[in-house]
Image 1: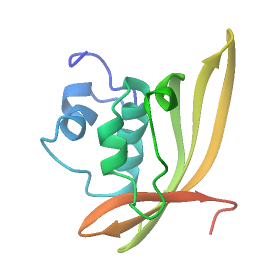
Image 2 (image 1 turned 90 degrees about the vertical axis):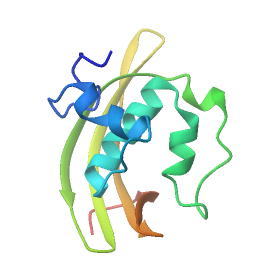
Image 3 (image 1 turned 180 degrees about the vertical axis):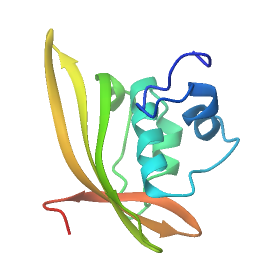
Length: 126
């Protein structure tokens, strides 16, 4: 997998992209790479990484069943960086019952204890 393109759609090899985050060699320094690495964590079933990158006040009680979705691709539409808060809009495709579906989300990220974390989806672009 490490020589393959990263599932996050960045165009980089997995080993030079999200593998650095998922293997604890580095931590994303902005919301967009964090969101991309969280997509990889979902697609690879990395529950520990998802918990680590979710704000403790909004993190649900995740379990292995939450990671059974077969994610197929990610498209980042736009991102709005900020010093303490950022927003990323994306589409993530998945397959269910041999049908392709898409989730379209605008996600809020905040700096928490000097690390970017996922907070929650927003209803509209701020």
